[in-house]
Image (cartoon, rainbow, N blue to C red):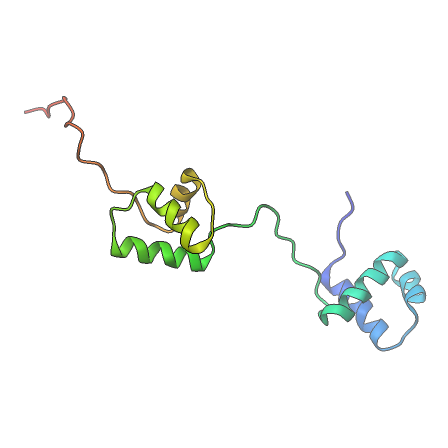
Length: 130
């Protein structure tokens, strides 16, 4: 697979084009790059004004952003015994975020929040040694 050109190489090409050292075709031949790459880079520079390459962030974008995290913290501070299902409903109604319970549980762990243990079960039958 082809590797991307380094940022400095890109900046050198764009600064040479900006200073008028030649046309895109001439500079592409001089820098040994394709004309398509030269056109793409110059168009991106004209559009954004930045000589840096695009940032690549692979993967799915998170549904819960900072605003939703603040809402979750606020709700749990006011009422700490909310269940995952109740939090899921609140997120859907108030923030417009549809999220699965397991995903919500993972987000709470990432945020440093935890679920309280249920005290409705019996104690373990194993007795400590005396």
